Length: 88
Image (spheres, rainbow, N blue to C red):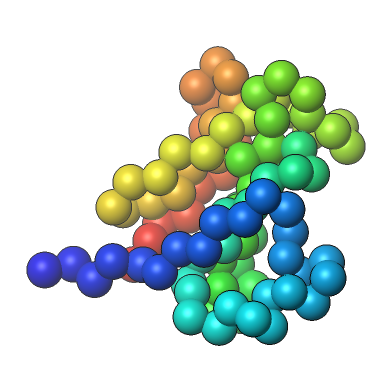
């Protein structure tokens, strides 16, 4: 049996207001609001933002996230993989 990851989702980045201190029981944080897609590993945490399919900001491309049991994938609107992270 594969161990499931603990995922925290938020509308905006909880790190901006030190709100992340309230949450210590997660492995993956997925949040929106900044309209810039990325997947980034910091220490033992994985942070991801889907970006925006309609209004990307900061010179980023139109993007979205796909997640399954094995990986988290950032794709552009044409389905091209922009970034991916294997979940182990």
